[in-house]
Image 1 (spheres, rainbow, N blue to C red):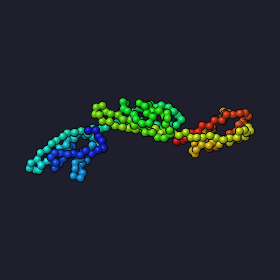
Image 2 (cartoon, rainbow, N blue to C red):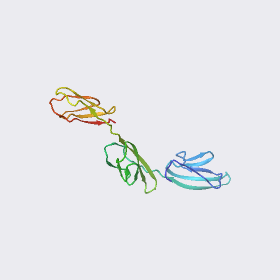
Image 3 (cartoon, one colour):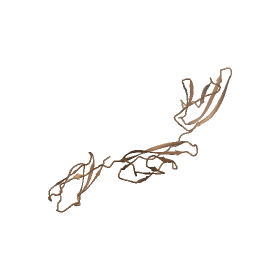
Image 4 (tube, rainbow, N blue to C red):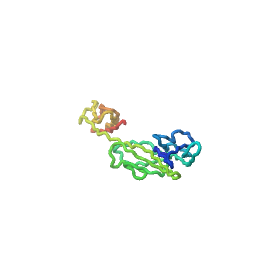
Length: 212
C-alpha cells in the first residue's frame, strides 16, 4: 500500500471481533472510531494485523502482514520569476528525472511564456517509483510580472548649461535608468534634472524597472 491520507475501514468475518496490530508503535496506525476499526495509511512501515473473535476460553484469529510504502521524494525545483515581455522557452528539471510535467505553458520538459498573460502559474511534476509504483508530486510557481507602462515628458528644447527636468509617468516605486544621449546616465525613482554642456540634438532613452 502506498502512503496516503486515507483511513481504511477494517471488516472482519464473522463480525464482532477485535483488531490488534504489531508493532504497536508508532501509535494511531490502528484507530478505533465510533465502534469501527480503521487503518491510518499515512504512517509508512511493516505491520502485522490480527483479527480475533471469541472469549478467554475459546477464540480464533486470522493474521495478515502488510507494508505501507513511503512516497518517493520529488523536487520540482525553485520558483521562477520572469517579465511579461521576456518571451522565452525555459527547461524544466524535476528530480528524479523521467517524471511528467503539467500546467499552462508546459510542453514535455519545457515551459514557454508565449500566449500567457501576467500572473502566477502552478507547474506540477509527478514521478512514479518503478519499484513500488508509488508516485508523488511537487510543484513550482512561475510568476510572470506585468511590464509597467511608462513614459516621460520634457521640454522640446533648452539652453546648454541650464538644468532640464525629465518627468517619468510610471507607477509608484518604479526605478528609472536614464541615458541622456550625451554620454551621461542617471538612475532615479522620480523626476530627474540633467544639464547639457554643449548644444545639439540628443536622443534620450529611459528604461523602467519594477523593483519587485
